[in-house]
Image (cartoon, rainbow, N blue to C red; front, top):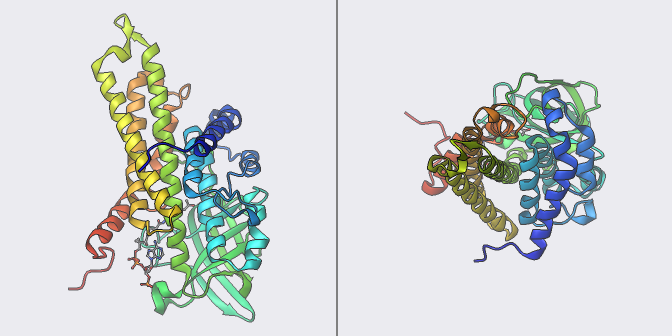
Amino acid sequence: MDFELSDEQKLISDSAREFCDREILPRVRDNDRAGRFDRELASKLGEVGYLGAPVAEEYGGRGLDYMGYGLIVEQVGRADSSARTVVSVQTSLVCGSIERWGTEEQKQELLPRLCAGEALGCFALTEPDTGSDAANLRTRAKKTDGGWSISGNKMWISMGNFAEVALVFAQTDPEKKHKGLAAFLVPTANDGYSAQEIHGKLGLRASDTAEIALDEVEVPDSAMLGEIGDGFKVAMSALDNGRYSVAAGCVGICDGCVDASVAYSTERKQFGVPIARFQLVQELLAEMIVKRDAARMLVYRAGSLKDRGLPNTAETSIAKLYATEAAVECANAAIQVHGGAGYVDDYPVERYLRDARVTTLYEGTSQIQKLIIGRDATGINAMTPMKD
Ligand code: CAA
């Protein structure tokens, strides 16, 4: 077991840090204040290869392993969780699903443009009445001559207003429950697709979040990703990778909290000495550092399992659960170190707290991660309805 990054991994991480310092940090406060989705920044992320890092080079990706991808996501998350959401959704949920489940034609048609950031994609699973119970979708896909007609509503969909293609999950036969689900690559320009921005979010204000309506949207048979009945597995396998990406981004938040708090506490003086001199401030720093390091090790473990092609659903949920909760706790502690200064956006820590909060909700709540971990440990699925 080697706890050191290789020279190549250090280079990936250092160059991602440099990119984020140069391209993301100068915009982050203004975008957050304006609640502006920065499409230009999304293109820059694509140009530098951060929207398809683990996708094979033949499809326009960088062909990196998951460790390398995680190191990039960590740096983007440290700079701006809204930009990190673009990376996670586009790479793990959309491109990763197409690469794993798509036909050669679908891959050739979509992946190069998505990896380059010329087009954006969104992952339309969640519905107004269907969040954690993802198998219970109400969106329906009805067979037509040579294709499908899709109707339903989707909720909390990142990039739904900017996506050119939506990966839409729909039920083809309610009697079959999750075995009737199918995934469709829906061009958002198609008649019947409409998206509306969701306003008033606590954080991730520079991330686009949409409510989507699908009103008899027609797609050809060739729009299906996988087969009828594969939809739930497409969603779950995508989330295995999306959760890894969210966790890596949260390591970045923890890291940013530590750095900001060390810098502030060694400069800020009270009672004639830097506040870092006080044991209670050092305790706050120490707790943040322990959480950051533990979260990072859990993310590395999940990445290493993925790179070796080994089962990793539980380990990914452990990393996601721990890292997202750690990010919230670190950000809260970082504000405490900064005092009143931490409550305004001259420092990044209040944004870290607002942005971290959603990570314990999206891509599976902390409670769902615990149930996945518990199912793995016991072999008992606590999500299955109890029989009297
Ligand atoms: N990979 C592949 N297949 C999987 C899988 C995985 N990780 N997990 C389960 N499956 C398969 C099972 O093997 C099973 O297959 P069979 O039918 O062949 O036996 C099938 O899927 C059903 O599995 P379960 O019985 O475990 O399903 P369940 O309904 O009991 O529970 C759940 C599943 C874990 C609760 C799941 O519904 C879940 O993860 N819910 C949370 C959903 C979620 O994360 N939503 C976030 C949406 S994305 C988002 O946030 C939007 C955004 O834009 C960022």
